[in-house]
Length: 327
Image 1 (cartoon, rainbow, N blue to C red):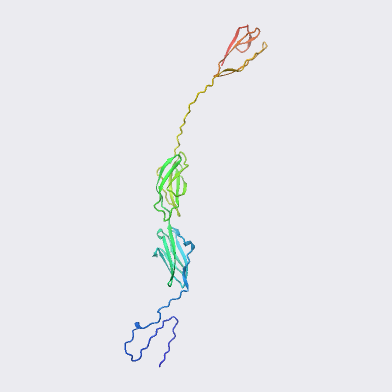
Image 2: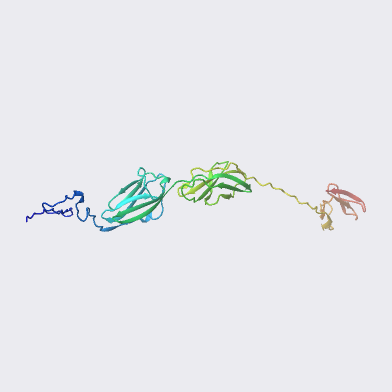
């Protein structure tokens, strides 16, 4: 019996064993495709570390970016040997012409150079290793400024107040509105001043307007990106007019101030010496003003009277020496 030496077989290589047919055996020989092969045709490497995604804390809530901003997400993962990482958006494959993906040994990067509102959605990263896999989901929201409110109008003006109404904007910028900003401007200066901020209703009352001025109003919509680029202005002006003042006069009751004449200081007797001047005093109270007439008369011989010029003179008993009228 002849012996044959078999060469050494490298580790991991395939080994095929064939049975030798005895010499002179009848029957056809088996084709190469019908020959029996070894236990496996390929060996898979063992899994040393299960796949796991370490999602950053900032990406566990909605990731918000503005239109035109760059989206650059780096998500680390682990697994050994290197797992296979794939990205999908809303369950469909990514558009590689707009979104770039780079997979490294321990992380995966999703990159969008200029984000658009159409890039908003739910992105899912799947890491596979053998029959094991790990997934992580990131919600991306791309927003921009809202559109302006519509159909603003001046409803009413009374006193120093004005009532406004408007309609919500058709485009909110792909996010919820934070409110409205109301501004006023008088026609004299033309400067705009804010009267309300973060206002949530679609109607308001503007107070403390200055009497005599005319005002125009405008309203901005606001979201996380800021105020709308434009704002509608009221067509009609609010004219703050001065209220007409009506004076009502009350009837005047005439009062009677008349008063009967009354001496508040009566005349007193006076003795004088011949050749000297003398004066007589008395006080009279009355209303209306009295017309006073004084009569002077000598009643005793040797007494004096008063001349027309005010000097004293002698007179006979019982004679009227002079009459003088005062007003």
